[in-house]
Image (cartoon, rainbow, N blue to C red; front, side):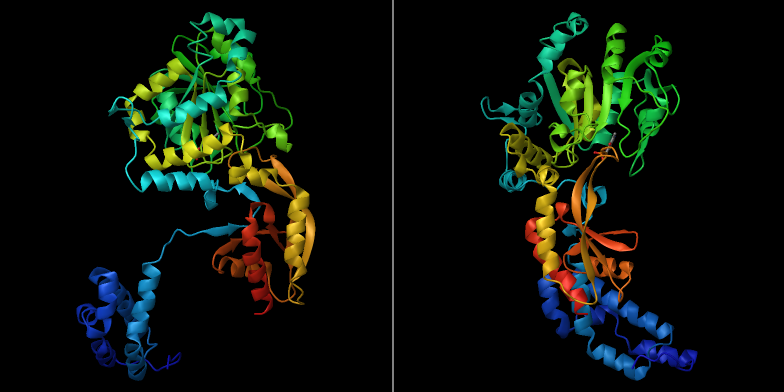
Length: 498
Ligand SMILES: *Cc1c(COP(=O)(O)O)cnc(C)c1O
């Protein structure tokens, strides 16, 4: 009934066709749609009716409907409206299966939350909570105390010894008060944390940073732009590939307020390079009585050497090396909710909290609940409770045996599945070289193109996101939850049967 090559009807004939269509109002108040109205509300039904009628009008305009076709379409219009309602009233944000092997995939929501985090959100956000209420005194409290107490347990363990190991450090006021007492505040994300720290520590003055660290991090977070928004003046030193302590030292003047180190994240400089160590920078900062801030980005609360990654400093490494304030994300290596975390000398952290920007950037109660539960897992040393950490700790053998179980059930001439060596990527601003050995399901096909296979996987429910490389579709089960293996297998079988 949909005619592809119909002779052009005259304008009057077209007008006759348009006249067959009911108005939005007539349609959405019709008896036939009354059940949808009582279920979904009049506004939603009006919107759906408008969308369906607009589609019909476009078809008439494009000469694709004749009178009989319109009659047919109108007889099924209630179904069309119901379908439209289902689409517009379903969630746009939905779960997907991450088979890319990138553990902290920014486009896929970074770290999946721990079950305990969701449970804590549910218990505390489903009702009222003591978010800013001191249950002892019955007076107003501070929201950051819920997590600061746990960060203290996690970060204060060794810093005291660092202060002793570095006598210069102890001369700056009481080391007990400053160094060996690390405080933490939390804002919405790490971009906000960097903004808050720069504004608090360097507003109206200069912050010295190496040219090699003026990076852009995905999603147009550019260090120079954030710097200018914070009203700190960027003072670049060194060259893209080489910066020495003496470069920083020469740039120090009476306007200097801060030394800044930025983790280069997803960018690497190799070859003829030089960068002072963080403790050399800390020494320089001490000598000139300037604070040293490090934007660590990923911010691990565990030692990545334990999973074979040697070049990613943890938050504790930075603090022990003498950094005064470290900024990092909650949903990268930490494995918690989106948050920006500032840990460091308590006198400086108090200034961050007192800055009026802090109020504008503060995290909400969901962040605090999820973060508190995630941190508690660290305190209890229950790392497997944090999904991202558990994925990082999976052995190649465990992944291989799951991959074999999936592949074993698929024998079809349409898909050729091999199990091959590969690498999972930590992602989330860890260095690009931060990878873990894995086993991949590598799929090729004579019947389907790789783009066709990956698009079919995306169209299953839930969507499966794969990697396409060198003419193969690659599935890395490291980032697939074991209970999702079955769904993945069924999706592959479905492709074989199509
Ligand atoms: C990821 C990252 C940021 C931005 O953090 P968000 O939590 O995404 O706002 C800033 N700096 C560095 C070095 C990063 O890696």
